[in-house]
Amino acid sequence: MSAGALRVLIPSEQIQQRVRALGEQIDADYPEGPVYMISILKGSFIFLADLARVLKRHSVRIEFMGISSYGQEKTSSGQVKVTRDLDTNIEGHDVLIVEDIIDSGFTLNYLTRLLAQRKPKSLEIVTLLDKPERRVQPVHVKYTGFQIPDEFVVGYGLDYAEDYRNLKDICVLSE
Ligand code: PRP
Image (cartoon, rainbow, N blue to C red; front, side):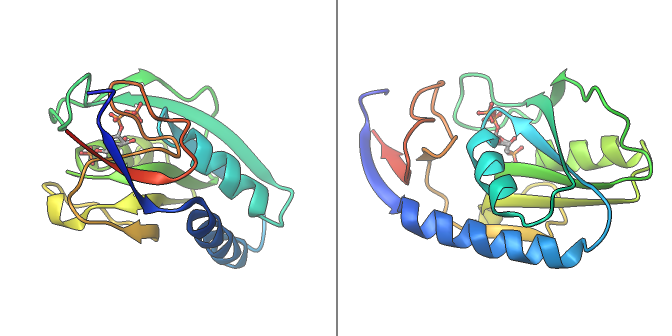
């Protein structure tokens, strides 16, 4: 399938414009203190890099966490596990979980419950993409880049079997 057909869904310029708007919202919502941005590997690494760089504030902490639920398949198994935990204490801090996409909601439903136990001052989600019609488990999302239809997308960090993450645009991959 790595030779599948690609169709641009969201071009790079539109992504960058939306990322700038999200950054302005985040800067306005957190006027004081550091914001801990937790990138959920691997898909969110490009979004995090762009989002962090449009923020005007200097007090941004970048953290990484590994979560796995898909394996090599196209659909979530619902079996969520932490593959790499944070190496910092988030207690008492403003925390933003940075995701590339929310699909079934299994990953973020699990992750928000896990991180809430660590007593952050605040805990919110910023996702570049959301497929609301695919939701199985509820997730409260404060910042969404784009709501998209139920199509398999790759690029700008998102993969299929580890390919396509380097595309600048978000594309639909079809057989
Ligand atoms: C994707 C995405 C989310 C999750 C969302 O990660 O980054 O973490 O799936 O799906 P859900 O809402 O159905 O739980 P994936 O497991 O593909 O890993 P990757 O980011 O390393 O590609």
